[in-house]
Each structure stands twice: as structure tokens, then as C-alpha cells.
Image (tube, rainbow over all chains, first blue to last red; front, top):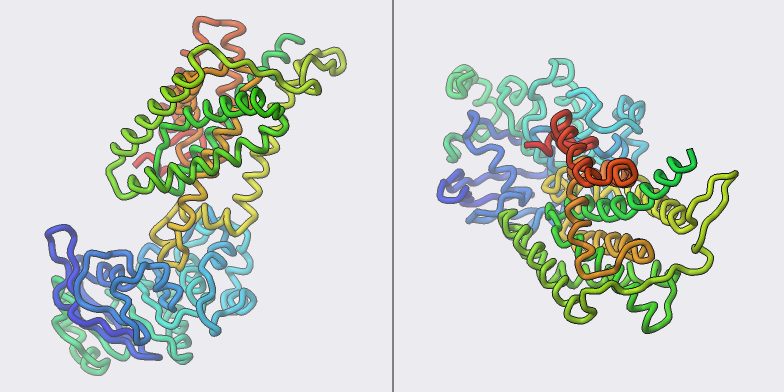
Length: 230
Length: 290
């Protein structure tokens, strides 16, 4: 559903991504691993349409969206879970959920969201940012699920969270995958990545240096950890 | 006691103009990121338009309260499409230059057409004179201005907190990029929001018409105080704009009553004190200081 071919991105004169090619299929979970500054977040911002200084092509569900504005990409079915979770302080939990428009008939109802995430139901009237870090992450994920997004772009959803919350996020990702939604997951937590993903791209200094399937990835875990400097 | 209440009502009436105009300024800044230095000129245009409508078409204040905001909204839409939209991607310095330049142009145009002496404006009979409330005699018009502007502020607050439009405005104010990435066409709201902010400034002008000397320069001093209001309330904060507006009106009225020489200075002393204690203003978010 997502095909990225020969994508270059710049910040002014500085090139941040070089000829990046990435593919995510229906019901496929693909991770993007790499050190800080490798260009992972830049890539995701290019995909959702917030970083526009690019060349190459991004196609989504068969159409070229390289020049499409961000809000239209979201309406076509891309759901972004931002690295800082992107929860609105000036919106209540429920308003955070209701803000993005529904984009497909697989959209969740508010009732379904609250059944899957009961803690959000309890806090529905509270300002979004009064939730704990883990709850905010759940809210960010629930928010894009409610729209019925076909592809999730998740930027480090496990970062800074307790192991039990990370495990819950892993379970959610596997559930999403089972419904045919594609997931592009940015992850520094190699162990977590191995539990959810089918394939892995290793990004280094703006280049995709390796593409690994999950068994290779697990076999070479030690080497990858060393590369990531963790 | 009677005198104190009279100053209070006078202050709340004056504060009404600041509150309405600052509310418009806050909403515009929130969604466009543009500090509109022409807001004082829009306020002046509101008052002048009301005076002209009364003079030529015999439209009373009641009509002007309805018609002038609509006209000012339309004018705001034209200004946004013609000029302001080009600022959104530029350095904030251009925003200052353009909106300040626009102020000079508007003020001079009004001077050319209507001269420098004040235009007359009489409020409708119903609002003239004084009203006796259990022994306290208060000017009807000032009471009306206060109640009317509180009603408008409450209405705007309800729209902002209870409707989908308000939700989108809040989201676009707080994190515009994220709103876009969540499928909100933020750009579509820019023009109507600017028009709405201008309409509020115009409405403040209409309310001020029977109360202030209507001249081309009436917006200049108003704009200076208005920026003190915005700093006190917290730039971009809607509640802050309204609270600070009434607060500054009160300080001004009591200052003029008890220490006329220092009336204006008092407002800026208040502003300085608030910046010292809360750099982001009374209701500003911390991010606003960065």
C-alpha cells in the first residue's frame, strides 16, 4: 500500500535522506531502525506530508502523493502517531479522539474505542495532556484507529514507557496487523521491534543500509545493537 | 460608594472595547500566527462606519451592531486574501511592517474623507441618560456596553469550547502541523478566522462610537493599550484576552478618577509586574515564552 522510491529530503542545503526506498504491504508491520539523527523521523514527516523539500516518489494505495498536502494524505488513510504523542492540551481526551475526520468504513466508533481502551473512557472529559505518558500513547494510537486509517506511521511508540505498557502496545500492533492495516514503525528498541515486525529497514545517515526479514534480524540482534550504540 | 460603582461601570464599559478587540486579536494570532497591528485601525473603522451609517442612511446603533460587523468581516476577508495570506510563510518582521503600514494607510484615508475633527454620534433613546438602581445612579449606555460585550464573549467562548469549529480552531492554534497530519485543512479556516477577528474589532468600534470621540486617530492610542492587554492576558489566550481587557479598563477608569496623571502609566506598570511574575501572561501557556 505504501511505496517509497528514491526519496531524497533536504533541510535547506543539508541532505537528510538519500535515495530511500521503502515498501509496506497490507497487514504488514515494517520497522525502521537507526540511531538518533539517522533520518527516521524526517522520513515519516516526508511520508505524512509535513516535510516538503523532497524529490523521488511516495505512492499510497496506488496513487502518487508526493505533492499531496498533509491533510489530504490523512484523509486518504495515513494515520500518524507522532514521536511526542501529539496530544492536545487544549482538547479533552474525547475531543482528541474526535478531531480527525473518519477516512474509511473501517473507522472505529467512540464506543469501540472506549471498549478497547477503558482508561480513556474514564478520563474522557479531562484535558488530553493530564494523562500519563502511557495513556497518552494509547490515546494517540486510538485516535488514528478511530479514523479508520489504512496505514499507521508510528514514531517510537514504546519510548520511555514501562515494559507492561510496551507489551500492551505490541499486542495492539498485532491486532491492527490482523485487520489488514499496514504499520511503519520507527523503533530503537530492537527487542520490541522483533516481537511485532515482519521486516526491518536499517537507516544510517539518511541511507537504507540493510533490509532484513525478522529471522535475520533476530539472529543479528547483537550486531545491530552495537550499530545502534545501545 | 456611589462614585466607586460609577467608576467601576465606566471601567467595565471601557474594558468591553479592549476585551472584544483583544479577543479578535487572540483568535487571529492563534490560527494565523500573525500579530495584527492594524487592529486599532479596524476598531476605528468600525466606529467611523457606524457614524457614517447613522449620518447617511439613518441607521441607528441597533442596526450598526448588526451591519458593521458583517461589513468588517467582509473587509477582513478582502485584506486577508489580498495582503495577509502572503505573510504566513515569512519572517514575523514583515507581519509588523505590513499591518502597521496598513494602519497608516487606513488612518490617512479616513482623515482625507472625514477630516480630523470628531464625527458626532448619539446613542438611541433607550440607551441614553441614567438608570437608578436602588439608589445607585449609573449611565445606561455604559451598563449596556458591558452586558452586551459580556454576552458576545460568552457566545464566542461557547463556540470555541462546544462546537467542532471551536475544536478545530483550538487544535490549529496549539499544534497546526499535527492538525494537518490528522486530516484538518487548517488553511481553509485562515480567511474566516481573520475576518471574524476583524469583525470583533469593528464591533468594539461601534460600541465605542457614542462613548468616544470618533476620529481617524482614535485607534492609535487604543492599539497601544490593546497590546498591553494582550501581553497581560497572554498572547493567543482567549480567556486571558477577555479578563485582561476588563482588568485594564478598570485600572484606566480608577486611575483617571484618583490619579489622572498616572492613569496610562498604571496600565503599563501592571503589564510590567505581570511580565515579571508570569512572563507568558496571566493565561498564556509556557510555550509562548519560547
